[in-house]
Image (cartoon, rainbow, N blue to C red; front, side, top):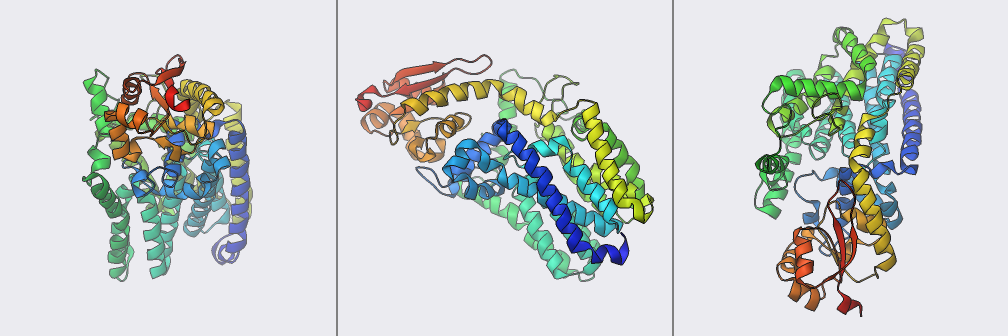
Length: 511
């Protein structure tokens, strides 16, 4: 359908697409969740537990948000993660991601239909995006990629609506989407000046562009203010001790190798394209490349530019920020951050959808379905699986093994209300699996109380009774404090390829 017919069918077709996306996303998410895949990523576990500790903590509040990871994904998780059973099982991290998957696909569909004046082309865009195995896996996890893609797709649709309508409501929706993106991932900050220039170019009333620019900067300014207030450094997320740059510099100082692409534009672009090849797949990349010329004849230039910006940001990040991507066919021949190439999928799908407009109008919907089925067939015929899933599976084997052992022990031995000191991070997954509320823990997020306990464990742990149990990695600050306080090692967990974990108890308090 094209033109007025497409507009008239808009609500009905949008509802149908939303229902289809919900069915696809829900089935894929349930399949992954039922097999325990949803928390394979260490970052997925961390996002879930950061969201939980904002309210479930000895010191609840905004300071529990932290500084490096942006806050919106954690806020979205709070209503789900505060249900104990959902937090314990990991289901809390799945539900909002599936919702973001549906929102992403629906806004891509709506944006493509507005540009191409074709429901069939728009359906092709939505299906090529939604049936990608890596998209389907990430939307079954509490990672930040799907919330960002939902924000990006909404921003695209709102800017196109503004181009056609000059409505101030479109400005407000675009600003809301921009803030959602910039409070989810830092590539959202990268988008802002380009979108401002677009508004300036297409606005008949230039105050619309000024309004967008003013509102869109609120998200980044809020995050700078958060870092300044809680850490006395507005750029703590960028140059603080837990920032990617600081971690990279520590690795180099310890004799680690330089990441591929570090201050090398060609290598950075090469690695990102290699990851895109694995994540999007050759067929979609080829169709997307072919569709670019057609899309440009359909006034789709802005859509292509906006969707290209996140991949460009990642190339820049590989070059300048100590951010690596590893793929199995390039040195060092492993898996790491392959999910960053997920940003190439909406771009390729959006461009590929333009090819459908070359088909007579009455065949366009059928053509989009055939394209989607063909894409499924290619993934199935080649035996390709989600490389992002493979990355999470390979890199989490040791962590999942020791987490299960430690959680099983604490679930049997830990008495509610005893208190446990531990370093917040991977070890937090032990408390989640053992169903121990985080408010019973003492960790870095508790600030002065934790620092004092580590400095004087003999006084504050044993005599002060801040915690009867301890969980630590061998040689870390908590491990040293527990030994200094005279806690007894009850269980040592040794897993190949992982640091040794220890579970300690103050036997005097237990008696």
